[in-house]
Length: 133
Ligand SMILES: [Zn+2]
Image (tube, rainbow, N blue to C red; front, side, top):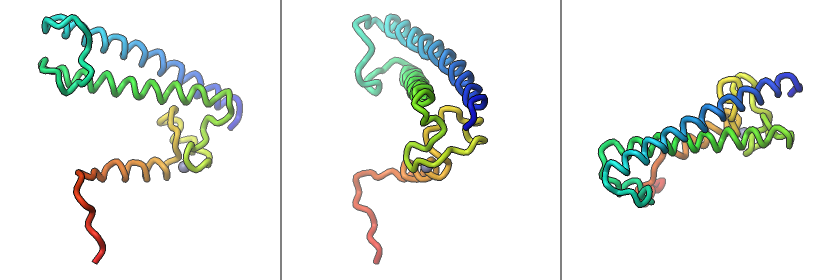
């Protein structure tokens, strides 16, 4: 990948990172406010599912989602100086530029991302898998 294109992605990632930090901050802020309103000022619950505040689960889910995204963005930023930015973390192939334009923090090529998604979309609920007859 040429230097100019890479610095374009770096700039895009930096902008995204700043926005996410702000969003995570305000999401956590509103969560804290909700906890205070609910009369529990001790701390955020360790298990979001335990919270019985209305809408709390949704807010926690949003905050967690943004945090995960922020982690991915920061990981992508760290890959730039190392020279592995734009390289699939699973198969080592270059990630296609259109994909990076759409998802600048992408850590996997489209093929690996598809494979990952397939495995995620097949939940196993502790039941034995069907065997081929
Ligand atoms: Zn790959």
